[in-house]
Image (cartoon, rainbow, N blue to C red; front, side, top):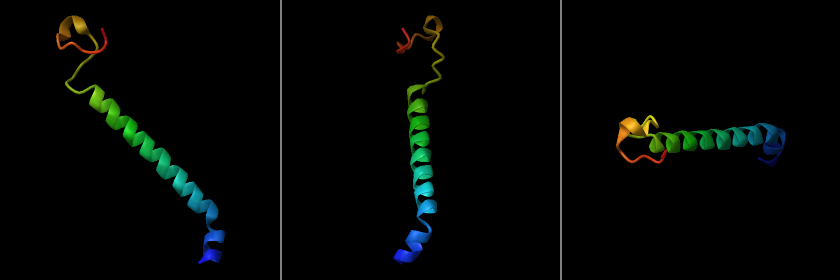
Length: 54
């Protein structure tokens, strides 16, 4: 078991880094989508919803 881990440590670390980066990207996209919900375009003159762009 330890020999297998030693032989594949670079692959395991690379996979772990890719998973963390992918997770951060997904979380960022979800937060961005949540902040822009309701179709707000940032044009407060026509919006009237009291968005945070003011």
